[in-house]
Length: 318
Ligand code: NAD
Ligand code: UDP
Ligand code: UDP
Image (cartoon, rainbow, N blue to C red; front, side, top):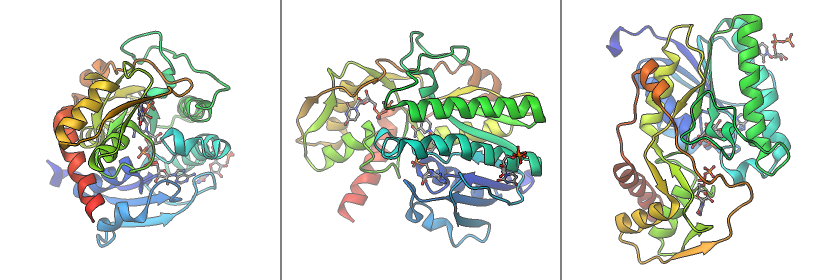
């Protein structure tokens, strides 16, 4: 199957980040040429170090808010800090990355007639009144809060994708990614899985925000990357948006307890204030992904956490 695929030149923006590095790895594994573009704001060379010796892999330091002239067949647009700590560090740059960066990527796709996929997010649904969230739902997003640079930036990026599609007949794919976790997450980016795992492995208090009854659905990175590639491979009629995530829903407290159990940690669970605009519930409706892509996640939370814990244990003891 893989060997019959045509070799393509694929650009991955944000390719040195958590999801991007796994995506580059998978695409190279399928025999494609991969150009990874990253400004290393949250990503690192270390995430892709193991790929550098592969002659089909190229790494370019570049900020997508500036134009980029390269020749490629497909583009995965992942460039954008994804965790609140990082995207709120320089909120104007975050919006620029989603808006100016996306315009440049779409301009590039238009010039070279490349298929282009946007890594959008469940945050476009904001703090939702509809549960689980299906793609038809328009969302409930605060336009002026601390999360807005990310949420509205990503919403505007979706608008740009659909306008380039309608106005310039670009082949677009918009994937709405729900919380994803796994090896190479930033250990200190404040996201819940990395926080809890690192806290548990170092026997520090596990910090649950609010009462811990808010829910999230966690998708293991390998499943997610397969979903992105499956979406890129669809024919031109499929534009999305398509939700990609694991519909298993857990409270944050359940997650904390599971991490303590799987690490055998002596950590205590402690409660801290809930951040502003923190969504109460989040769970993807993945009917569309299953119907159109034949995709559904295969790795459950327990198994994914075991793999993630293994990675962080090795990092901490290294
Ligand atoms: P990440 O921070 O590890 O990766 C983002 C990458 O983009 C980093 O390598 C960073 O250095 C790079 N980057 C940021 N601004 C850039 C710019 N202006 N120019 C070039 N590179 C830039 O985060 P991630 O979790 O791998 O997320 C990847 C993408 O997926 C993001 O667009 C994010 O919004 C989206 N997403 C992720 C999740 C998740 O749970 N991980 C959920 C929804 C959406
Ligand atoms: N662009 C780019 N690489 C390309 C082609 C375009 O970075 O290969 C950028 C270019 O700087 C432009 C943006 O993409 O500002 C949008 O391009 P488009 O052709 O849609 O618009 P225009 O050039 O007319 O502004
Ligand atoms: N969270 C928590 N403790 C932490 C980090 C996060 O309880 O140390 C909570 C956070 O308030 C949110 C959930 O876990 O309710 C998921 O947070 P994350 O930042 O990972 O993702 P997002 O809010 O973007 O879904």
